[in-house]
Length: 178
Image (tube, rainbow, N blue to C red; front, top):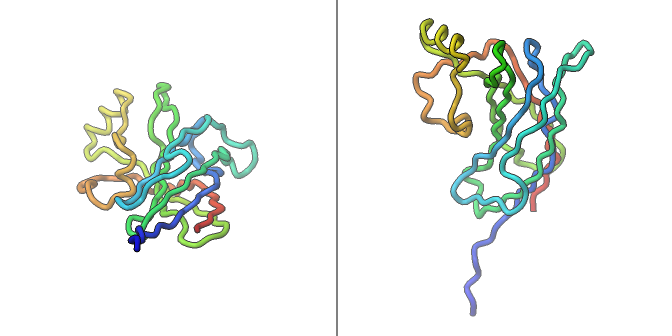
């Protein structure tokens, strides 16, 4: 009698990064990537992507609308390390350099159906006034070399983050699992 292999389950995500509210910024674009545990493996779709540049709407909301599609399938043998999506939003500073305008992460939904998530965004901040001035003057604001660190618990000790302004990206995820 043949030994049965480990059973797997699939997590299929089909949705979009809909829009964001960054009232003080314009002409922004969005990147996404996924962070997941060792037992997880992508089986179809793109693990990361970059959107087009969008301008604020001219209505009262002043929303930045991307409607950026996401379509990916993961498989796993257990739920430990459930996937998270990490969003990074970038745009020009006063010198025209692309700088980070926000980082955020959220776990993918655990149940099938249509889900809408609002992801709080934050920006790393220099720890001293001299560093703040130097980074502003040189046009290089603090940012992560790997945005996946946003979804991980460790490795960000002693970090300052500017999170006073609520910046949110709407993530619409019609979601199914098998």
